[in-house]
Amino acid sequence: MNNKWILPLLGVLVLVSALGVVFAKHQNRKLYAELSELQKQRDTMELEWGRLQLEQSTWATHGRVEKIARQKLKMRNVDYDKVVIVK
Image 1 (cartoon, rainbow, N blue to C red):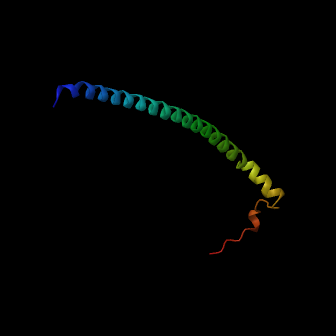
Image 2 (image 1 turned 90 degrees about the horizontal axis):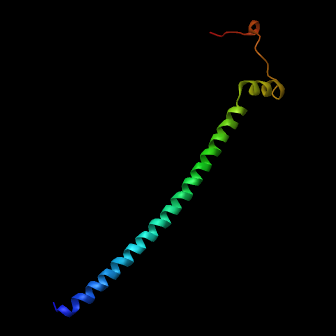
Image 3 (image 1 turned 60 degrees about the vertical axis):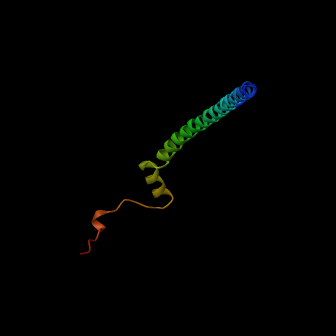
């Protein structure tokens, strides 16, 4: 290879390498920002999930279910003297 082409070729390779480093750094920052945003969304969803579980447990308490069964469905406890066992 001719010696006069080596220095410009090395210069071009260094420039291409530098541009690659800049591009990789930019991609890294962009992906890190996206990761941070997704982590915030995850944390928000976990809080909402906890609130929903608490709400569900509140709605499903034994006392509430029994109250609704008595008031809206007109249900009552069984009189055991009226129970017939079929064999």
